[in-house]
Amino acid sequence: MTPSTSPLDQVAAGIAHAARIAGRRADAVTLIAVSKTHDAETIRPLLAAGQRVFGENRVQEAAAKWPALREAYPDVALHLIGQLQSNKAEEAVALFDAIHAVDRESLVDALGKAIAKSGRRPDCFLQVNIGDEAQKGGCAIDALPGLLARARDAGLPVAGLMCLPPADVEPAPYFALLAKLAREVGLAGLSMGMSADYETAVTLGATHVRVGSALFGTRGAA
Image (cartoon, rainbow, N blue to C red; front, side, top):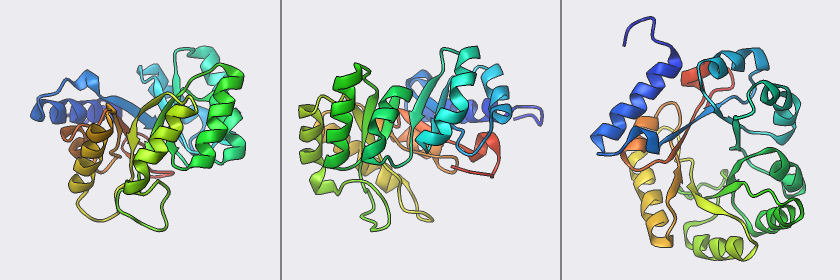
């Protein structure tokens, strides 16, 4: 990398390198630029550089800043990557093109009703608590088949699985486990990998990586 290479170019090169190692195509991986806590002026340079997929943690924050940005860039896809309260399901379905942290039956039911009411069908990823951590969202591994069945019955377009591996440990075994679970339940999408480990995630099959600090700096890092 040359010093003049932009963060976006560096991340794209990292994805391409990891994909080559795994014998995959780089364009099989969607880069989600995690723009949570960043204002419109910080986001605009990435939009100008061609980035079109962005991730937000909160419905309210996204609703405040993205409608105006989308007027200028109508081809932007917005992904909700944070935890979602069931009472915000209707707003989320109206605003987002994908929802990544579907982790419980009450949320599945709320999203199913919102999708039926609005006709919008955002891709949904079921979040798995891959490290069995009490403080994290996600369904238990053994609860995944039941949650998937409930989601399909509710009419959710389930695109894949999502996880957040435990911090400060080697993430590869957790990414490999999520990929194995996805194969077992017949799902192609894998939302896994963030700024510190997205290349590892790509080598293990990630279809969506959620990168914040490597693109925007450490404030509000992902």
